[in-house]
Image 1 (cartoon, rainbow, N blue to C red):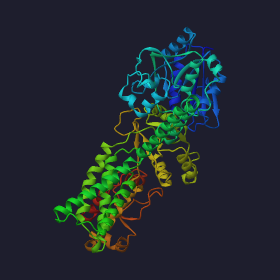
Image 2 (image 1 turned 180 degrees about the horizontal axis):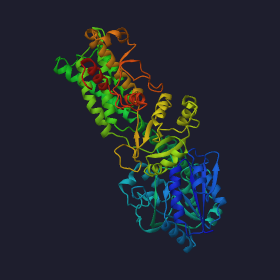
Image 3 (image 1 turned 180 degrees about the vertical axis):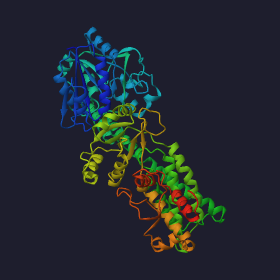
Image 4 (image 1 turned 135 degrees about the vertical axis):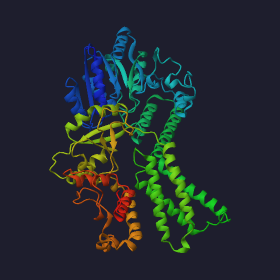
Length: 624
């Protein structure tokens, strides 16, 4: 046996599938074996390997043992003279494996080799070759100074920036994403140091190999694709903790001078705290930005209006305006939150922000009209601030759009649905649209979804699910209604496109379309309430003479009946609505289930203007 390929997997089922395909193509003519170690994945990785790659030696763990322990399990089982430690988020080729294997055979003093790595866009990954993290090289990296001098031998020694990325060089550290090592060397060292959970193991192993007097070589003539960051949630707080804990373990093990050890420990703690704060701010960046924009807009408008309209710069400096302004801030913020402006990736973030500000402005004006005269300050402040915010909030969504990372998705469907969408999910994983995709089988269809809500909610919560994916089946509309009715969490629902091979659709995620039931969203519920209230105030005083309105006058006045609502009978899974005086028009001809289609369309794409058009058409006998 010439080569053993070891792949450690944790919740990257579709990336692992692509990786294994590339591996078996690359080693087709090489006497080899492949060992996959699964660290308690929950995304059906194990079932996929068992079904698609029965030739793989599969080791499964009941818990996540981390990088070092899990790889050591496979190293002890390996029969190859050489071992390739490989990340599941890589795509390899025959040239890289053959070049590495031949180089190890040619030179006795070379213990391990690595190759040039590029990301999914073909950009060189500088961690392909690294220097030993001394105090100064680590300091230049932590402070960011190394970025200013990318080719300097000392200031960018951490990434050996002075070495040609396309050449062959002896290096001090090789990455664990692609690390080909002679088996006898690993046995001599006892494998990876299990004091590390994740991160730092490759640096430690590289250092121990060099302490034995062997060389590490970087082969710039061979390359692989490393979809960096897919195999772990590389932008989470957990990542920060694991990364900096590994650095502390390394410092404790290899830095002997007390002063140096103290300085490095303090630097790592400060860098970790800074990284944690940065991520916390990142995830709350838009709400913070909106608070600043809303507060600043109200302040500037009152300053300008008091000076140039009232001629008194201190006109609004009294408690009534302070409480008014605080109310405006709260209502606009709540409106943005209710509209889903802070949810994960949305298809129209600017439009959602615009709608939220307009709705919030209408609510403020309505509540303002109910205030005592002594507490009313100026409607102009509300209108002008609302007008400006309706422009700058959507603009901020464009200019300050946060960087998107891989999402976590749950396919709600059976095994057939998963097989149908397998190709799409693999492409989406390779492009990092999704870092995790699992499947939840709805099981026995005779059991109401409400009875399965606990399991679904637990899965969504425990796996930090951001998207629920639906296959385009005849039942998808009913499934969507039942899922949204169950209120399982703050997730986005995506539906398979008609043509999943079209990977260039204008939506945020190719091959999938966001589907929303608008009447479940608070801002649309509020819009419908406002339409009903204003129509009752404007229409009932004069239109009571119409027979339809006269017969339902009391219900309309008391709010027991709406002006527009569902066709009857209405599916109980639809968002709850009171009976309506009028219903949406039927655009579905003589389909047997036309009432469901009409009602679903109404709930999904609700717009207050739709209600107004229906009401006007009924009042004045005109066509919609």
